[in-house]
Amino acid sequence: MQKNKVILLLSGGIDSTTLLAKLKAEGKEVIAISFFYEQKHAIELEYAKENAKKYNVLEHRTIQLDSQLFSSSALVNNNEKLSTYENGIKPEGQENAYVPYRNLVFLSLALSLAETKNINDIYVAFNNDDSINFWDCTSTFLSQINTISGTSKTKIHAPLINLSKKEVVRLAKKINVNLEETISCYQPTDNNECGKCLSCLVKNDALNRQ
Ligand SMILES: [Zn+2]
Image (cartoon, rainbow, N blue to C red; front, side, top):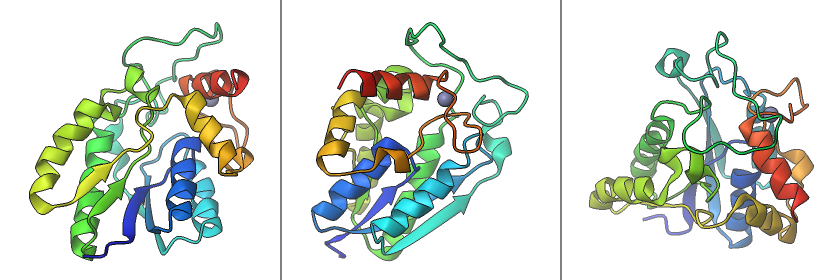
């Protein structure tokens, strides 16, 4: 068993970058994995790459997936407009940025890599605000996957799952994560966040309420 080595799902956003900084501060050796599936915000992968370098991960792998798997999602399908929230009111329940079973796919691949490399711990940066709109970020979902993976002694950890986005931002600041070096928008233009999508809404709300 590789006790100090862990696998982290790294997206380039505030949550996973903050978790990366936290794991490194705790002395963990991190193997980061990111995913390319022709997402509209594929620029996040550049941020993931820079943060992987900055935080000195052991290895950063970007796994490429066929975008057709996810083409019902507005996050992937160029003919579907992502919902926007100019009125500043957060939606309840699932919205069209949801990607079909994405987190199950991502975590399954992380489990494959973990078993291959004899690593017992996988980290994912779900937060409590995610669970409002995405069922595959909830603690129920997490415990259900851990029931399966438990047979192989590999555990998936989501240490930010009880924190709101506001609390994640607070933690980020406390451990000196440079928020300018992260990107959260679902539809950025180059490096500029749109300010209107669900992700921008949640992020800006968290920043404004510090
Ligand atoms: Zn946006």
